[in-house]
Image 1: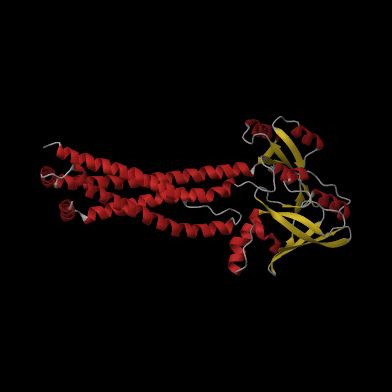
Image 2: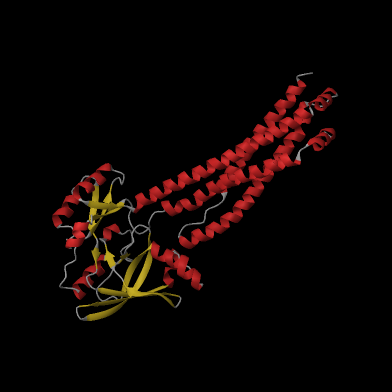
Length: 398
């Protein structure tokens, strides 16, 4: 055994093995990074909204140049709403209701004001909001109004304002830190309400209040105005049904679905990561080929001496073992260093992910660890077989 090790050390090429090591390290890192990044970021696109029921779409009338210049009405008539409800692919439909009065808002976090401007609030029928009625209810005379904010609002705060002012970042569990005041003007009166933020919606970009509050407030502060249905919220059996887009095109409607947008984003994410992983696999395959070629040439170079060792009683298993251990050591070192580098890189990009999306749960590194161990097992198994087969070919020449 010692003679084989001595023979191996005398003829080993440090440059060749160093080239294999760094090439394989780079390829392995790319593969593991692609898999880990996909599992870490995937919840951003696939997470369900805890406040809005699934499979919904928003419907509005297409705004053209003629309508814009002529000031045409883009609201839905009752007959149009009933026609939409009667379609076989529509499960339910309801109207967005906006405020017909002026609303100003002041929002602060930890004593720091971050918003002080006029805003537009909306409501949808309560059956579309997946929140218990004890949280999503307003009674006349209450000075507290439940509110659901768009997730994009809090993302802008966390990633921009909070980071630059060293303020606490807000997640779903810290909504109590938000101090929101609503100032309503209309019909010769003005009142102040406290907005109680109960959560954030991933699917809607509107500031939502209960339907009961919106009906009361419009009647109280703008009795002369009749709210118009400019947009509809509909639920469907299958968002991918081609009849939906066909119906919308025939009637001049625009349909948007955040779930469809998220699916497209997730698809492109998978596509990009797949391309990156293919590059990593190609690099790893080439480095693996370099290693096997180096080992093959090393064995071939020492074939005469190895044959003598076999003749004096060394078994093929004993002769091949040092070469097998060398490849195993190189492959294990590559995996360990790749995982260490991945841990450092993952810490950096996860800080950004948690800043933008504090609601997502932290994932583990098990996907990359399992993938790395699987590749290690496969490559090592091939290495052991090829080396042993080469030694056996020398043995069979005797």
